[in-house]
Length: 476
Image 1 (cartoon, rainbow, N blue to C red):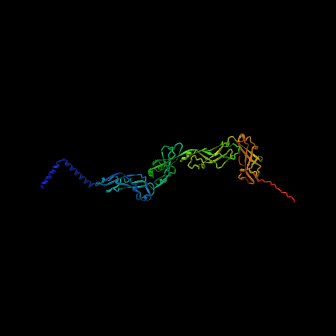
Image 2: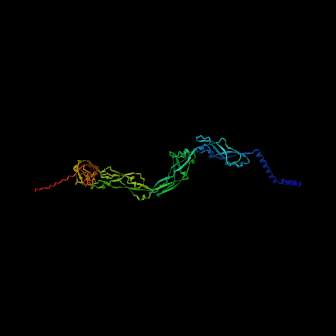
């Protein structure tokens, strides 16, 4: 035993004689002395964490405001600085994510903005025993807004000045799907319309529909006065508080073909005497709108070059004066072409009459010596006119012809076959009214009578003279 102790003593004496061993022992001894003093005299340490996140979702969770559908919007602080006091043994395990800051909105009264007191909360993954608080106790409040979150669906108006149609085509429409906007109630309710601005420049030359994709960044929300909502609510609301139910928008560009159609009307003029030059009238007629522009998505437009129109009533020569016009209903004519759109927005056109170089003359009276009666039923009926004269008879024609014509040049013809009271070889007996046609000599082929004239005539059946045959008797 003595030998063992002697050997240990000798080893220690020799070891202490070496400088390196003496240095290591000094360091170890110093560490234990420092640890003892630090844990005995100064067991805790205070450290600071800057920019600790303020958790607003946790702030409203479980509160009466959340139960009523409110959310926190646009707080004026996102982070806060905190201080933490903990034992030195595990202070190194703590960092800024070991805590979060919470806004206390339990006493929300509905006034905006809300001033809420901040407090520091330990994170769920922080098991360490420590004390924590805001770094600056005087800077412990945040201003925020509490609004109900609602969703509203808005139609989208597309503005795309650079999207056009090439010649022979038409930009029929730019349509976009509606969007659902979610955000704070008072500001979502302010949205009256939504505009999508497209900056593409393209001219389409094909009759079809095209898809154009647009970014949500090109959307502008407008109030009823046409003002940008985002500009109105700033700085009180952040511009990204509105959420849209789509990641991008699809715009349909609809291209139609366009075409000019000549309007064609039928040259129907009735009650024209045989001698009269009908072309003289036709050459002076023209349409107020000779053509219209139509468009269509259907290929049938390629086969249509004109639009036939007709008047609801026939045009009588006697109805044409120097101010004559006759209307044609284009909408009615287009009913035969349901796939055409009337881009001219002209619903009617009318015939204009050029009266240049024409004159009028009115005769106070034409006596019955100038009357003639056309009676195809004269074998059965006799006719006698009751009217003794026609008053205020007007003729129209070239000035040089009108100057030459006198009342003696006029003839009044009553055609019994053209009356509604005659037909099928029968006439209505008694006094009846018939239309009278004023005629002129054939050399005045460009002159006609204007106006409607009638005469009263009396019609009665012919009386046949019967011969009575007598047979003489003889006496026996």
